[in-house]
Length: 88
Image (tube, rainbow, N blue to C red; front, side, top):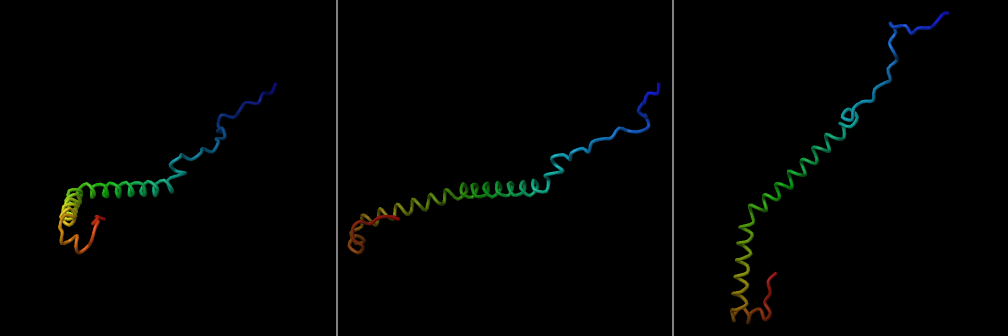
């Protein structure tokens, strides 16, 4: 009886392997990651700038409020501008 034995010298056919996620998607992932990092750094810089400038902004607001109160209580300003004197 003649039995067909597989030839051990011949390799088994391999299925083509699917490329990894990184090799398929790096072309859009890298620019997207750079954009996200850029936006995050811009947000951090803006928040840091507001944090650093807040004492000066608050000081200007206090000066404005004080000047408005003086103008509202000065009869010369009331005579020149009329009533009511409101801040912006």
